[in-house]
Length: 247
Image (tube, rainbow, N blue to C red; front, side):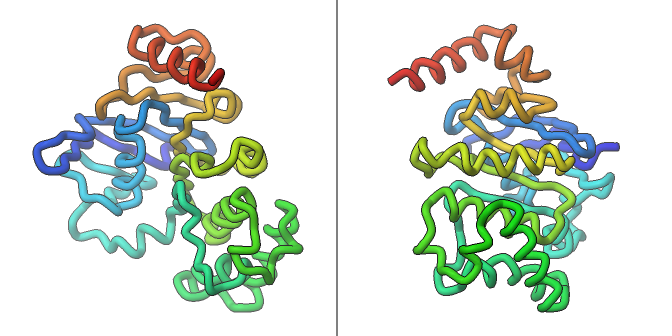
């Protein structure tokens, strides 16, 4: 069963086409990893899936329901989605615990005490229980991003979207964020994520899609796309990534 079906999606900003008839399928309990240079369309695709950007053509289906139908209630759809951005987007005036419980209580109608108990359990699991009553500016960047991920999974989303969640972090902090994503993958969370971390992509991806200029140029298991790319465009991109990593 596919949790997500993106079918021939086209998206433009003015005269610039940023997604060209793009299609992906994401089966339940799998992780699809999007790779490609900045501007290749990865973030736009994630924003379209989360209904933050309207598409020009094609359709997007969540559990076989077309969520790009104009008659759809966007707020209801978003209750089934979790999204984590490059920037942490935590509310600075709220404690970590309040950041995590805000949506379960106000959007999903979870009892306050139940929401707090669940949040504490998640914080314990990911070694952040001692930060529950601190404000975001007291946390490291890695800790803030981990809280942002916990906030997204606290609503038990059907699909989790992750957009370059390590790009704003010091390299030393990257692995503590990636470790939480590895744990979610182990739990069977269905995910679509954009990343420049090729080693990480190799570890978690069931399918890797290489995007260039809004098109999927090459797709397949990580063992093929990252370790043994078939097309010159993919080979050139990975060469640049590896050279940048040595700088």
